[in-house]
Image (cartoon, rainbow over all chains, first blue to last red; front, top):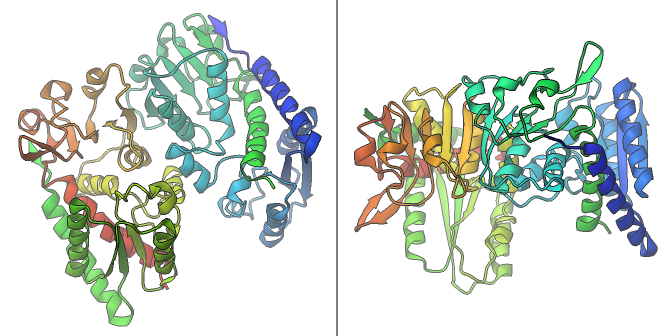
Length: 280
Length: 280
């Protein structure tokens, strides 16, 4: 059994990004990421601080825009439009969750799709689904990078995804399908879950339920990717019962130290991609 | 065993559309569909003539724009822009295939996404994938209508799709997933196909290979939807060996007379939807 080490892979990728940006900045401007945060959500502040730190580490420009809890829809859209028009900003994210009086879907639809480095707009989701991706959702594309880093081929494999969210489950399905896996998407309404997961060569779990996947649900020799991030008995844990499952499988991602770090790293990758595709 | 009769269902739907348009035109303009055809492809001419006939049958306005084989990219885009700007046109399709000197993806990207009644643009594909569909691809949405018409629920069922095209396989997967089926997408690189199809409660086949699905690949009592349209020994046939498979299953669509007619009908549905959503 091998543990897939997200920390090492993300550090390797960030070192590559730093080299790339060092080269770019010899002759031009650095790629730029803008992060808008509305209100005082404590977890959001930590996430944003981490993103800014990642930018600094690789030499990417970052702009952090903090707006008050009672920001109106119009004010927030104005801030978005300001970054949409800014030629030194290649990627723009609005940190979620937003305060309740703001409609997240409506707000996000104002982000220029060419700066949508979360990859969650209808346009970027559609490009991914059609097999002509540009800016891909960060978490599933981080999973694909982990598989690549460990030389795990998915072509012809039975890949099973538990969870059908727009952020992980569905884009994960498109990516595995594009790389020629046979893909099954399971969810809360799936009847015979264990039967299906036991046939999985590659099992991706993204449901947000602590240690939901137990050893009896996993095929011996499988690759298990745990996208969950839960707190149980005061400790962080994933959607997979790591200690029991790890004895049966060929590869497994730990929580923390697995997929989570890759999500942040892929945000950097997307911002560089947006710069290369559309930057002026 | 019950044969799913696409002709009856599509006639019923068209009767509803006619009623709706009769009501609309009492006070306003009828919804309008524009079809651009480039060159002299014989099959395309038949398809276009059928679409125009459907429009006439339900009282929808239709405009048929025929361009010469040697039409340039610029001329074709100008024609598209002309219909994009026309407030009496709600739906616009460019009949495929295009002559070889024209890049289909590039050409189609010029259609206003709000008039994309084929539902194949990145934007409309993305909306469907995100679970907030507006204009859905016609063939898979025709399949969903057939299932509905026969009272076949998909929630909690194992749905297996053979084929992963952007036009059928992938959008079919989003639609079945949205209605709570557990969805597996198989394709040419799938290793253990028969094992997977034999577990399917609902099997959708869209690969374009005559009578590919044989009786031993199907679970007794399954619902089999045949999207194929092939010619073998001078006769039209689907991707399913209809005569043998029909003995085993609960429901099956014939070819012709099944899904094919629904595709045309759903183009009408989309044009009315576009009128309702965006029409002025």
